[in-house]
Image (cartoon, rainbow, N blue to C red):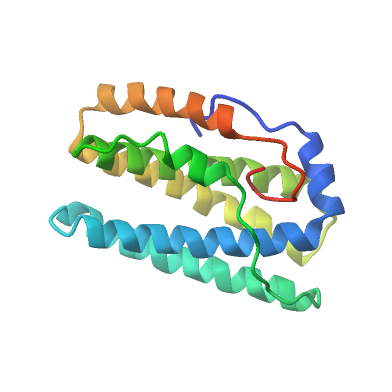
Length: 190
């Protein structure tokens, strides 16, 4: 369902638990960036009316998740701070073709893959966390992340033939698997 070409090493969850405060700060940044991306797409494609309401709804939900992440940090006594982003999203965005309408297709599918990887990682984290508010929060986010992944694919299928979307999604999922690194910094996508 998530259209990922690779699975995260299960050891990532142990690493994430050992660096949980940093993972939570990065997660907050990811939610904020996801909201910004949805808004940017609305401004880039104002003539694609079928995108506007779903992306507006998605941006609001991502901002709600951002606020929830800030609350989880506050509960842990951690102050939100600026982080150097991982190379993951930037490397993935470089695979987007420049010419329209293929740029739209690729952008929607890259966004879908980022949501899919987030869902997969949040599931691993939720399974590793002890019972409590944080575990419950991550379990609660899983359906939203999966819905966001599917939503981006559905938007792509509105503008492009399903077979073209499926084929490009396979190609981009291979790119996503190749840019997923095991970098030294604790990140949701590294």
